[in-house]
Image 1 (tube, rainbow, N blue to C red):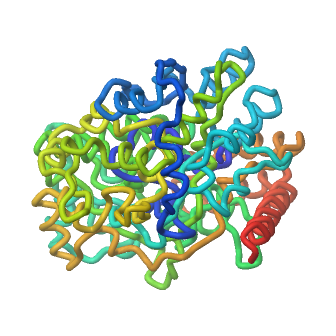
Image 2: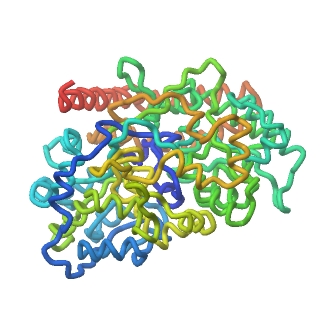
Image 3: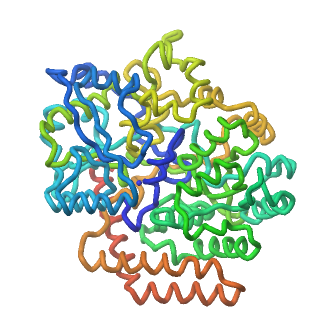
Length: 571
């Protein structure tokens, strides 16, 4: 994700765009706990269903490319007797979730953010999973271990499942959120870029020299504000450039006090950067009206020179560029800051990845026990190997006791952006850099081997020759090496259910409406004086709406969560 109108907008783009990477913060590096699963539970439940007679369950998804029928999903049906019929959501995802609930016409399985999950809980539309996990979830209990109680809501029940992190290190495929085209770097002599000012200079020089790319207008800097994308492209860059962990639309100080990020000095600085881009005709002219898919389409055309575009968002356009042979239009993923004095604490790891991608079973589902057995199989070691590595002999082979991706499969992924869909690797997003229910890149299974194929060697094996050349210019092996040291945190604020009182919801909606109305006015200000007035008026209006009590509500949510987290883990 977890979100709603206040969250970090990981959700939709990760659903529509994810090809290689993940989310949470810009680099998507979450983790925690132990790094190796024990064999006990996995060995006890490799055959999750007494009867494998096929049962078809409906599931709401936001990705039109998802299919059930590749070798991996076929094997899942063979092992569990479950087949998923994907009910694609067309249009606004949040609106569709609300419509489903209003009509009590929802799929058997839903993937919700935590705000909508709470709505479904309040309406009695999803079932508690506690007893089902106790009876049919040995692998779930084994993998979650001490973290299982973090799934519980205020009423003590568990209503959803999602991925978790049992790794202790950032994955080798982690990347920073700001991107700049390879060809832009080449033209500038592969300079070191650490600040927004340096990024501006490099991009402007290229855009001035090449006003068109393949006959289309060059977009010096891309962004998108429609719907949920305002959180990604107008909020998260300010968090990243200031070196803060990604708490969605919030900044949390050392004492645990929460501030709404849109009114922070960090956002003001970033808006000032966008304002400069706008007045110099470098910001995409359609930034305030288009959504994620439009921006991705422009990136896939090779004409967006730079942007804040985390790997989960940029991976699909980059795959299209590779397939089209436009290797020079791919993106370097680099940390960029307001200035070189920024101390970067953004590379954070959390124990789990809920918030925007929580799987729940609705009251419409017949035989929910079978769904739980299906979920449990996904958490088993056998299920982890199948969904993350694929089918032995087809996607990987075992050499010297270790799983290794087959070169033919690596090449197929590089040449066909949709190969991971066709083979069944792709699922509705579960809050991890991988799909299905992952336990984290870098985590190990009971056999001592890695749970996913994401190692430095495997990541480099999938780089094309131009990416390797660009990396060599900066004396690094992977983009992950540009990131700061990993810091462990209890969680992210966007992963937590927001305050549920009616007063909060009114303020939340008014603040969101205010931000959407005023952001374009601030960024399009004609001069410094107009910019200062527009931003000042925005902050004053936010305070008049009830910003102080809004922030206080989230401060309580955060401090209560941290106290519960520490108590649960005996800290």
